[in-house]
Image (cartoon, rainbow, N blue to C red; front, side):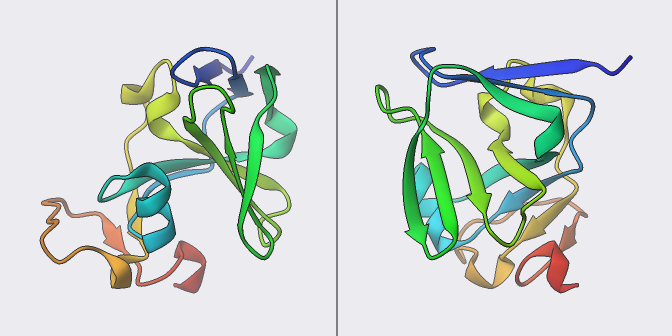
Amino acid sequence: MSESHSGRCLCGAVRFEFEGDPNWVAYCHCNSCRRNTASPTTVFIGVDRDRCRFSKGKTAVYESSPGVRRHFCGTCGTPLAYDADRYPEEIHYYLSNLEDPERFRPQAHVYTREQLQWFEVADDLKRYPGTGDDA
């Protein structure tokens, strides 16, 4: 039986859960994610849609570009997930919203071509100028 994981927004109005391990875990350095989170980078976990769900509340959704939806809590504003037409079988949750974020370590950096020059990360993880799919 696979392990279950859960996460939530800051106020707790929206919760999500998924079964098993994520497909991948990666830092994203793209401009859109930086603006969405007001931080120099963020970490996503990719999970198959058939292993996850929003278990409490309903997300508000903002279409940040054609075919890209960003889910967030309509009450407290916490970003919760990235959902894109180019990944129809997967949803990307923000790692920091998990109840157990230390459980999963990033495996790579994506969109490093947009990384802030002053933001240095001292690790040996793979780096991709775009998505990991571009490799």
